[in-house]
Image (cartoon, rainbow, N blue to C red; front, side, top):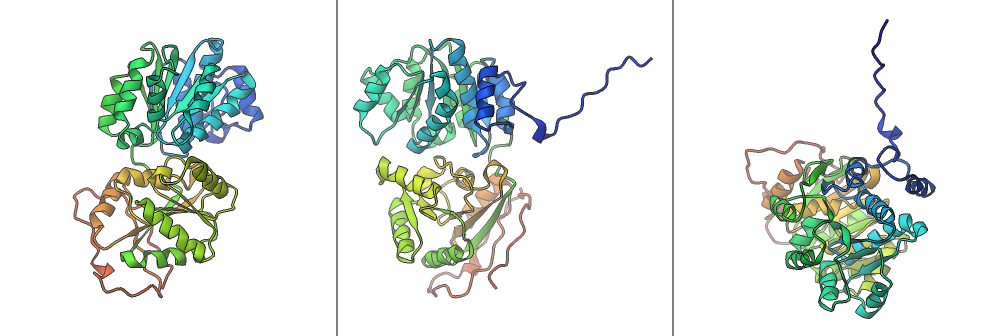
Length: 416
């Protein structure tokens, strides 16, 4: 007689559900009603750890569902303690705070979960009024949260769950002093969840000072980009960039997100596109919160085909079906390349990322390639671009390096 039990079949990814992750039945019912049936990889790995109350360092590229990975466990914790506790979620940008709040409310509203968004760019008094109603979830940016602590309108002693989302970006933006100040007021006996697409060693060191034996949950190494995003590079003179952008907008017919480094140039590019008949909006730090919300909403619903943005939007845009991301200017650091192109190819869909590099930016291109382990294939410039008397694009060279990135994309020769 064979006493061995049969080996259970390995589930395919499409067969994995939220059941079995330790989620309470009533929350499972809500997820099913909202159409959330199959967890993403980060959700599948992080939720079982988080619902046990353990600290987590979660590393996943943008567009992989990190919000539900921490949102479901914190809602479950609040319900478990019958609302006698709070959760604090700290994020780098206003847009991201608003979007996280929308996701938390989708799940939590039916359970009576109240949340408040504390961000700059809006009057502080309405936020004070919302805080007086004792919300369960506090979502905000470091500066405004610190303001409320200073004015004694926010108490954090009963926070049992702390989330630092896009942590590397917050430290890159200089929020470390505010975050350290906030952590002084949060209950030490808490669960801390830190999520980000990249995790430099410096951030890990800072984070572990405020965490208890954190479990590292990683679905891709830092710097990994989505496999279904196609990459392309044009070496182009600065004076030819705008003409090249217009050529590409004639070729691609879907929604396009254009990134620049300087907000004043973003405004100029947006004005040029509007003058050419392309419906466009701009989003950067010189725009008010209402203007940024209007631009983002118009981009979501198709009123604007092109959104011109600075890096303030690289982590704060959650728009489905963006066909193309164009790096009009290369980002200041290689990590931002990952976040920028993470706006396309989301949730398993295909996407496209095109970057413009000037002839003297070979080193910057190489840094991006070393981080992402991708060779950015150079494509031929189209005919008809304005002729300028400057260094020829053919002089572009990547610096030599002993480490070679893997070749994951073939070059395109569309313009001949």
